[in-house]
Image (cartoon, rainbow, N blue to C red; front, side):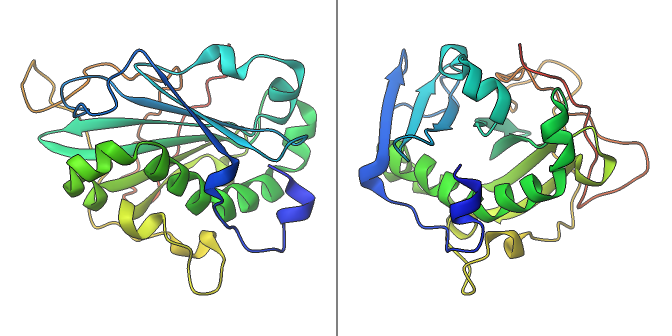
Length: 225
């Protein structure tokens, strides 16, 4: 993300700047029948986005010195929890590099501001899936912010995908966070047919706190190798 240029400007999705790669998945299949994950990266040189849609995170897309330093990738996965589909999105705020620690607050603001663009990229890139299963537009979006700073190490519910992917009237995506009346979805403890996939497709494994928080839940930061 071009952090300086976009800091005060509107977050606008441009389809012409999105490159979509389908890696080993059928773009027309329902995610309940096949694992489905998104890996989105941004090039500061070309200002273009690359979205890989696959059965797991596309680690090869995250290699290279620039990605390792800036950590501006966004990864996500569709999950069915107790019969309800939801989209789980992960962002690296800080940890692993002192520069990221220094600007954690700014990075949190920028990620929140750009998230509607990210979600719009998912919707556009996986358009056939959303057209074939329009009910997924009403699925809740859960955003996991990973940070070694407790204030920014949190989980937020951004509401239904159709609303979370739409820019707010003021152009500030960070204002779209929804207060959730329910807890972070938890899979069944025993083997069942209502949860899928059983294991996360993403190396980051967020855990709920034990303080009863509902709309905001702290997560454990696990650096992706």
